[in-house]
Image (cartoon, rainbow, N blue to C red):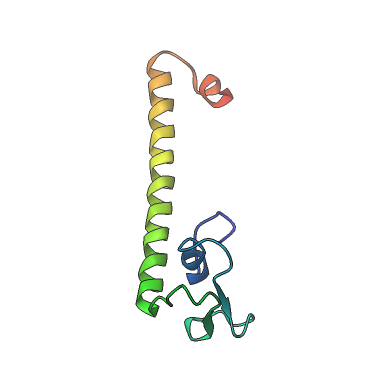
Length: 93
């Protein structure tokens, strides 16, 4: 994940698929799909496309939640202003 908590690597997708340490990397300094290894033989290795699609979905979900929070915050501020609060009062909240 990046500094804002947004998923930015297939590892973020893989970590949420199963509990525990079920996957690893043959080269920990080069975490690319080709270096993905499955440590738990009860788990199947997802395809590279599944990893890419899964990461994209995580990113989309993260972005939607962030956008909704920003929209809700703006809406709340506007409603407070409509009730007569000043900008300073709204920001103080």
